[in-house]
Amino acid sequence: MNSELLSALKDLEKERGIDFNVLVDAIEAALISAYKKNFGASQNVRVHIDRETGEFKVFTRKTVVEAVMDSKAEISLEDARKERPDYELEDVIEYEVTPKDFGRIAAQTAKQVVVQRIREAERDMIFDKYYSQKGDIITGIIHRCENRNVYIDMGNTEVCLGPNEQMPGENYVPGMRIKAYIIDVKKTTKGPQIQVSRTHPGFLERLFELEVPEIQDGTIEVKSVAREAGFRSKIAVWSENDNVDALGACVGPKGMRVQAIVNELRGEKIDIIKWNEEPAEFIASALSPAKVVSVEVWDGEKGAQVVVPDYQLSLAIGKEGQNARLAAKLTGWKIDIKSESQMNQALNILQESGEGAEEDEGLWEEEAWQEETESPEVEQ
Image (tube, rainbow, N blue to C red; front, side):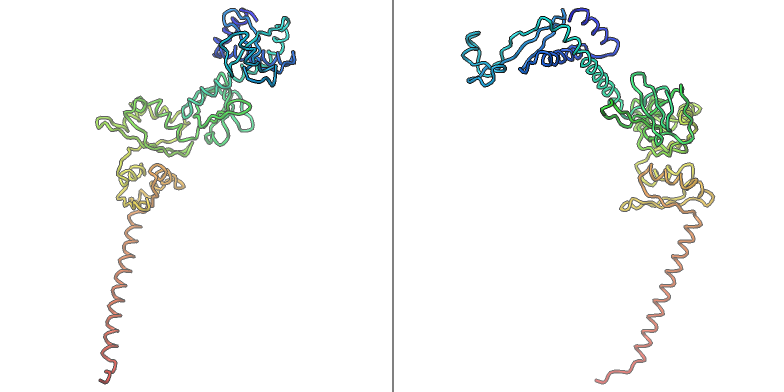
């Protein structure tokens, strides 16, 4: 072990970002393992490497005890005080036992251990880096596509975009630069497993943060997001500042901001909704682009009945119920949509059934009176 090796370790720190002390600690651990393996030592040993000169020393450690049970690991208090009078029970005394020919054996044995520790340190560093980015967007280059999985090269690691996290109809070509949203980061025996997605609602929210400075600085708040990836999305925004137009800021000058997001999502339609603390007004806005006549809410059931013009019914429901479904996800309310004619028809049926009930009640009362007057009197 010499200063040249320490210099190489410092260069490794600069190139790969692994802490110099982590590498030296790994080598010290490897030397302990090498010493015990090659010299048959079972006692407690410690290896120290001088951070300046690279010189290493091996020490055996003995604990001061009353009665010695293991002479390799323990020393009596009486013998310890012969060396130094101030030793007390449970103190640890170290003796240098560095073998003369230990350098060559140590280097050979330590190599694999050091490489493994370097690899583990790199894995931990990658895990810490991406775990801190959980819930953010990363950008990489598609490396390859295998079995419907898309592998993205991030420079220091590779992440897999699974089939369920890919947008419908999107083509992935090796060499293409792509953005993805980090859902989760886990530690595995094969290294960090980074789960990414392009269909997650959080991906849309983060794209708006990238494009809209007012969302980044907190002037505008994203309240909720509902998304059917590749087809349509709705995002509800709001600002405490009355002077800030939340919708206008998200759309951008000539629609440039939202158009950049639409381009990234390969043409996915996006409805930007103004959030409102009043459920009825929020639900009406969430059904955009359809116009709403009235909204009746039931707080206990968290449900709402919405009435729209006849010609707006199909627009409010959307293709295969998509618009209504997204509005329900966005607001968190169950929404029942009816046209004006359907509502009027329902009211007429209720009114007719109510009038019929009143007529039946009057007829029953008249028949009961007639039966009472016609019945024979009871003799006193």
